[in-house]
Every structure is written in structure tokens, then in C-alpha cells.
Image 1 (tube, rainbow over the protein chains, first blue to last red):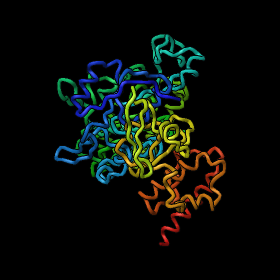
Image 2 (cartoon, rainbow over the protein chains, first blue to last red; image 1 turned 180 degrees about the vertical axis):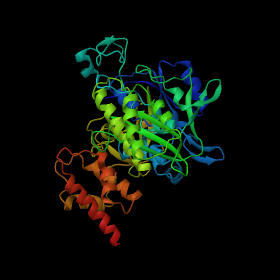
Image 3 (cartoon, rainbow over the protein chains, first blue to last red; image 1 turned 30 degrees about the vertical axis):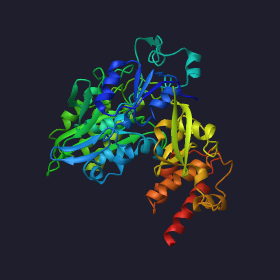
Image 4 (cartoon, chains in turn cyan, yellow; image 1 turned 180 degrees about the horizontal axis):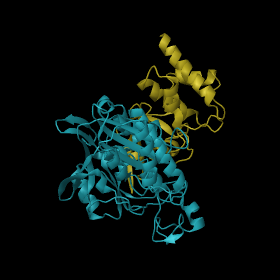
Length: 323
Length: 157
């Protein structure tokens, strides 16, 4: 399958890239690792006029620990993240999540920024043009009807990123560069919970770096999937717990991937965890609670009921590991 | 949009005039005639097109040729030295780890990059490392034996 033709740009700075993107936001795409973008282009899900290669910009890949926490450049590869002793020690869940993406070569090529901004997935969408045309293209691909629910104007594609739930649970911020300059805000704000257009950025804005506060407590990432490699999560869970000495939880964050059009946080369960004492009874109660709270979206493959059950299983497993 | 692309492949410099939308896989096979690199799924799911770029395994079907400029590319043709097979290549032959041979270049190169990075891996780590390389003959047992034999020989040295 050949790539469609495009105009190729190698900006020398992030500002230059942001200006290039702002001058033609609909016709331009950003290339980082390419493991998601180029597949979508081969499938003719995207046929951009212009491809902006961010890898031509120097100093975009780094992992730096400072007084405010850790800064990770968006072009840092997943392999660099998982092999960094700093990250392994301070944010083990991030290391686990990076190791769970694709296989060895995907981790070598794939970047942190690309992983966060990966497209939502659906059985009816992530297919070749030939396959999609047999049924009539879906709403996300530019047609009228979502084939999952057979309704117009809705998109039931799933966000399947591995890093986003962990980074949200760790309360990461992002810094973005736009044509007018930089701004910083919580990572979770880039996810609009809209399957058709999952990400929110202002015109010409590009992710620059991830900022993680100093780690408090423990973190863990569990991914439920069909086979051990090259697989997106059916459901995955990032848990970040701050346990006091007497086994009471000062704070807990629970974020899922694979259950909605963006990462989904279980706020009600988090409230119940706060101040509670971590014991076997509580774990059972929280696992039932999260299964009730999470309302997985209907998607093209697994049923919401199955995902709900798995969400409970994952929380039970992760809390037991932390006990 | 066409462009002159300079590639450093297997210790040699090449200059190619080709489209900026051409993948490294297409250029290796069609312009340089290095057909040892295989085109499998062409979507990054099978690992048959794996080449080593700057010491790490990359999927050449998802790498733009223009983006591989200035980097050191090794394909399966560049692995043997003066007619002597690389220990991994020899092990694949000796252990019968080749059936149809289509996945072999990718398997060998992924294993090489991995062993260069982790000289003493566990069995589980090797399995994980080659998990992105599919063998449709399902000859994984022999492939694991071949890689393990190289690891054991390295340990003895």
C-alpha cells in the first residue's frame, strides 16, 4: 500500500512548525514516530496536502528531573521512557505503560507525544479504503452513520492510548507551543471525549513537553488485552495511590483507557477511596463500585457489560498488588 | 514532490531521486535492489520489513526514506562480514529456524538489535522482543532455540 503524495516540510524550530500548521490546519499533519499516522495515511483515512516532520527540530527528546518534578520532551521515544532509570524509580506505572505499547520496534519508533495524540480506533474505521467502501464509509471517516450504533451524527470510536491514563492519574500538565507562544494546562484537557475529533488544541498548537509533579505514593498500570503483544487495550487501568503510614488512603486516582472516546476517570470511586483504609473488604467494595460507575461506551468489538466487569477485575487486582 | 535522498546503507552511501512519500522499504527494495527486506503487511503489524537504524530495530514500511537520511541503516544484506555469516544467521540455519524464510530477515535483525542492547536476556525477554515479528509457519520454537543458542555462546565467551 503506497502512501499518498504530499508536500514535505522540515521545520527547524517548534515555532516554525506551529506557524506552518496554523497556515493550513486542515491540510497539514504532524509526523512524530509515524506508527499511527502513516498507517492511517496508507488506509487513506488521511490524505494531507502537507506533512510537517517534527523530528527535524532539535532538542525535542529529553527526560529531565528538576525541582518541580520531571519534564519529558514529546519526541522522547517509548523505548527511552521504559529504559530510563529515573522513570522506572519515580513513575513505575509510566514505565509499565510504555512497555505495553505495540512491540519492540513500535516502542523504538513511537513517541510520547504521538502516543498521547493517537487516533481513536474502531473496527469500521481503521480499515483500508477498499474494506470501508464495501459497507459505505462511517461517520468518523466522513459518512453519515456510525456503524456501531447505526445512528447518524454519533461516533463510537475508542481512545486506546496506554500513556494517557497513567499521565492523567499522575496529574501531568502539558506545555504546548502555538503561533502566539506557549501555554501550560492539565493534560486531561486535550481530550474532548468526542470520537470524531478526540483532541482539543487551538489553531497551530503543537505538544511540546509533559510536566510531571514529584511522585507521591505508588502508581500502577494494568492492561487487559487479547494477546501479549502488538495489541491495544480492551480495557486498561492506571492507579495512583497515596497511602499514609496507617494504610489509609490520602488520595487515589483511577483512570481507564479503552472504555470511552477519551481516557475516563472514576471520580465517584476516587471519592470513596479517600480516607478509607485499604483492606480486603474495601477492595471488594471498590471493585464493585467502579464496575457500577464506569459506563463503557458501546464499541465495535467488546460489549459494555464485558468491559464493566473487566474494569472491576483490574481495580481489584491493582489494589491487591498495592496492599 | 521529488527530492534527492542520501542514504547510508550497509556501510555504503547511496543517492536516490525519489518521491518524499516513498517509504524506506520501497526505496530499499525498488531503488537499491535490497530485496532481503520483506514487505509483509506493510502496516507495521508483522515485522517482516524490520531494518536496524542507528542500532535499533525500525519498521521500514512506516519510515519515510527522506527521514532516514544521515542515519546508519543495516539491512539483512549488511549483516554478514566478508562472506561469513553473523552468529545469529548461522544459528538460524543450524537450528532449522527457517521454514519459508519470509519472516527471517526481520527476526534476525530484531534479535540482533535486542542482543546488542541486552547481552544476557531471559527467555521471557527474548520472547517479548521478537513478539512484533510474526512467523506464519509458526516456527517460533526453533527461532527461540536459535536465539538462545547465541545467547549461551556469548555467555561462555
